[in-house]
Image (cartoon, rainbow over all chains, first blue to last red; front, top):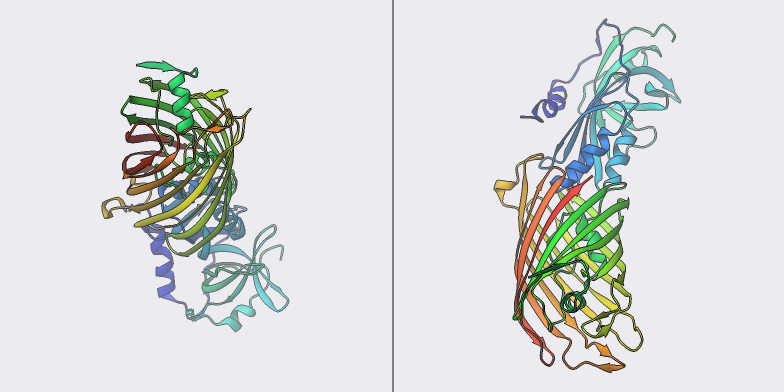
Length: 183
Length: 289
């Protein structure tokens, strides 16, 4: 099934949960959104899907788009170090006349602390604010103690009204490297 | 049989009688909707579409055909511009055809039409589901001075349609009015119209994108034409009421769409001596750029 692989990723991650932060000592080489599964309301027909697919493929850094009309999902595969933001994705969906709802994302970026908040910098002008996911079993105090500049990979959900910067309810967090060299 | 892109008496008459709605071209151009009735969808922002349409009307005097090329452009997700261009007509000569049109969403082959669609209401309560309402505004310019002895001026058109779309069911209800302006004492009668459409996508064709997407419609059109005016006097052999009903089908695959349908008169109450209409048919090929 063409769409099957992408759709199964997030439920699998959600089901797993994490009791603590995983630390994986491998160098990070690709900041940015890695995968996005965006729920869309209102798409009913093939031209709807075609328009959304074509529009999103026009974003630099989007390698592949799968649209499921029956599930109301748009899944994006993104190139390493892409500049794509969730706001851009949702704007393009709105421009096609449809309603973006919640999104599941997987992203890699640099951890920062700002205004007593934990944020993930994906690239220039691209930031996600991290908040504890209700279904996750993360030690948030431990996350807060992580040094700024650490490279982490997160998976989580961005609500329909996600704020600015978009808030991600984090389900998993993986420490990819300890303290960025420039951090 | 004749083929011509030049106005002939019967072609002009048919053009006048089929005088449609400026609005329709754009709403139709996105190919989401029915063949004859009004529908709500508009193109996405920056999206172009092309519709090539072949239409037929069969009356007691024979068959007439016309072809139109339509272009649509999405100014925004809720605002669409359209242009409908007559490209040819052929068939039997007709001297008397009841005033009607082939579809509420398509222009007369005698008129060059420009239109704007404004989807002023839209809500998407669930996956694959939308309620929406659209206003259609248009103007048309005739390509000839007279049709069946009646001076033809520019026309204005306004329509309203509301509807529901889902992965299984569709419906639209709408209506509008086309008004021709006076031209040296002559004027084609105003044309009021309503349309009702029920659509269904069988389970077989609910397979996911990019599989082919087919749906069927039951369409009904009601038309009220007022009498034409010739040299300041009303023509007794013009105007009347009609209701037409029939099936249509729409098939979509990626950036291509084809649709076709036929309408049969269920009721006709025309003034004076006018030729009966037997059926009207339409076939459209759509492409999204």
